[in-house]
Image (cartoon, rainbow, N blue to C red):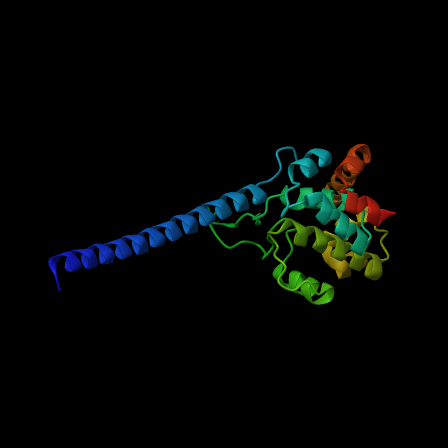
Length: 233
């Protein structure tokens, strides 16, 4: 092989190696960007709304393509029949709209962090066993307790069970919350009768529902997409 041919071959090999290296670097860069973007979007999506006492503000803030809270709440209302303010008031009480909310740990000897009192988790504070019942009953397999759309659907589903098993109106926030806390069997046995603290909480949830309803009355039309307007009519 001549010196020129050898030199050309060498340059060709180096160029090929350089191209391959460049492609690998570009793929790595794209992968990193996707991971960063996904992490950022997930963090934004799961952060609680800035003003949890104003339902219009919450729905306007959480109106992304993949995280539209109003649309998810409206779908649950259509499926299970509970008004949006009732479900949102219950979620406000249970988790303050924190995706990864858990019950505080018990303290051993008064200061050592110990086990949590239950498996409650997520926006709705649903227990694992009740969540499994929801998945089987609704067909929403793979639902996540830290996903707003699944959690609001769970609350709507649970209230529908309360309506069927306990005869509670789906607009009766006070009784729905008692059944949500005590379970359907507990509600029917009136286990809440001597729990004044729980009845006080249910009263607060009912008042929050009324507040949310007044707020939603003033802004719901502006929240509805053309698709929802068509569907309602």
